[in-house]
Amino acid sequence: MNAEPERKFGVVVVGVGRAGSVRIRDLRNPHASSAFLNLIGFVSRRELGNIDEVQQISLENALSSPEVEVAYICSESSSHEDYIRQFLNAGKHVLVEYPMTLSWEAAQDLWKLAEQKGKVLHEEHVELLMEEFAFLKKEVVGKDLLKGSLLFTAGPLEEERFGFPAFSGISRLTWLVSLFGELSLISATLEERKEDQHMKMTVCLETENKRPLTWIEEKGPGLKRNRHLSFHFKSGSLENMPNVGVNKNIFLKDQNIFVQKLLGQFSEKELAAEKKRILHCLWLAEEIQKYCYSKKSSEPLGF
Image (cartoon, rainbow, N blue to C red; front, side):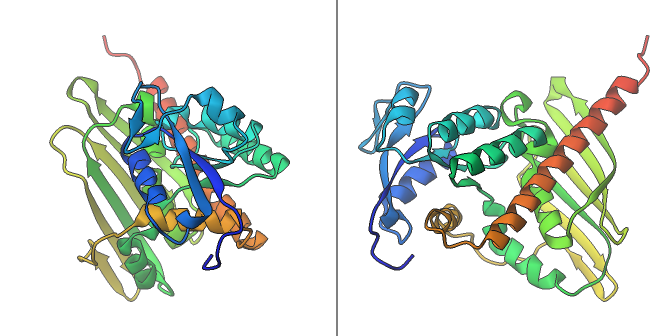
């Protein structure tokens, strides 16, 4: 990627919230990967005109324009599937913020479509590019896990826009799978107080070696964004995360990976392993959702 680009891929950013704004910033600044990309404009449901001299274009123009070869999907999670499908069918490469979809089956279908069209479909996972994850990966390697837990707290999130908590929190699930391998679902519960905008999801998972892992997502007003972890190994324990430094340019690092894919610099083996991990996490998220809903529907009605 250090070579002078022979050509630039025209890019449109769909959605200009936090992630979309960071994507536009990175595309406009002189970086190694940005040299291969040419920001054409952005798509938004709101009438914004332009942002920092970047012009707003209609979805129809983005889909039909031969100049646009790449779409960055940075909209609400509930809209991802439809946007991905439209841009792939229009012959564009796609980078999408996680989760790719709110359904395992839909993700499989979209990957098949990308393969049929010969296009790159890349799901962003900046949580794997964080300093905390790099630290954990080093700490965990070669150790025999006995049990572990990961608790994440944050403010409320609208399920209609961002999906069931197992999907909106899929970055935590991705951490656990990336650290400990494929997991099985043992049980899951969802406690909700909708009038207080409070919810707590508790998931019991198991590694292939039958070691228990507990994942908890708790969201509500006044809850600070925080991560608490506890991993117990035969050789000792890791309780909570030390301060391992600031996460710098994680979206840019993700863009670098995407451009390497556009340039064919990832092996088939690497791409297959990544796809397998992503689909496994989406499958787990869906299984958790089904389990929680089945528990709710089987609960006796109170009179």
